[in-house]
Length: 130
Image (cartoon, rainbow, N blue to C red; front, top):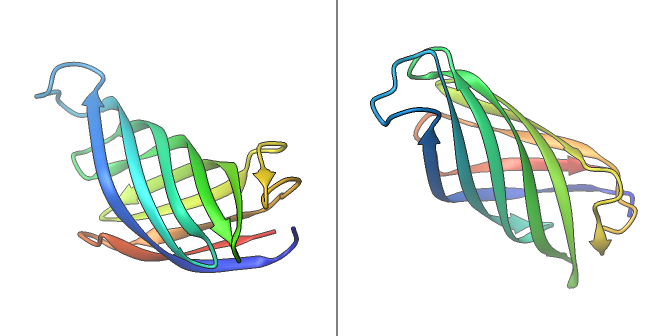
C-alpha cells in the first residue's frame, strides 16, 4: 500500500500512572494507556502505551507504541505505530510505522506521519504517508 492517508482522531480515554505516588513532584516519569477513534481514510480504533517524562506539570516528552485496528476503503488490517511526542501546551506527535507490523490492508506498509493536538482539544487532524 503506497498512499497518503488523512482524517481526524478523537481521544477516547487516558489512564496515566506516575512512576511514583500520585502526588509526584516534577520532574517525574509516568506511563499511560491512551485510546483513540479514527475517521477519514482510516476508520478504526487504537491503543497506545506511552512512557512519559514531565519536566514541569505541562511540559515534557514521551515515546509509545500504538496498535491500530482499522479499515481502509473497506479492507481490514492492523499496524503498529511508533510515537514520539513532545508537549508544552499543544502535543506534537510524529509517527513511524513499525517495520513488518502490518496485516491485511497494512501488510508491507511503510510510512510516517503524525498530528498536532492543540491544548484542551479532543479531536484533531492526522496524516499517514507511505
